[in-house]
Image (cartoon, rainbow, N blue to C red; front, top):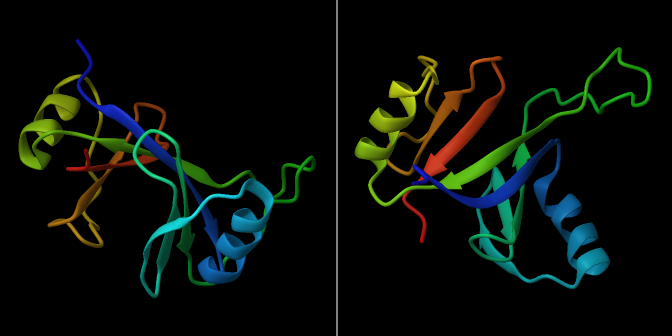
Length: 120
C-alpha cells in the first residue's frame, strides 16, 4: 500500500511566473495556484510547480558544476500522519520548514528533498 500519491514535480528558479508562463505555452496547461514564491500548473498527479529560490543558479548541464535542481511533490491524506509514516521508512525532516501548515519538506535517504501536502 502506498504511503503517498504523486502530485507533481517542481523546478527551482528565480522567477516562477515567467517560467510558468513558458510551460503554459509549451504544454498548454493551466495555472491552478499562484503566490509570490510558487506557481503550479495542472492538478494532482499531472502537475508541475515552479519555486522561487533566492540567488538561484541555473544548472550547467551537462557539466556537473551546478547540478540539476528539482524535487517531487507528493500528496498524503493527513499531513501529520503521512509525515510520521514516511519518516518511519527512512526519510528525515530538516529543521527549516517554509510553510509547515501547508506542506512539509522531507529528505530521502540520499538527501534529496521532496514535499508532502494534504492534496487530493
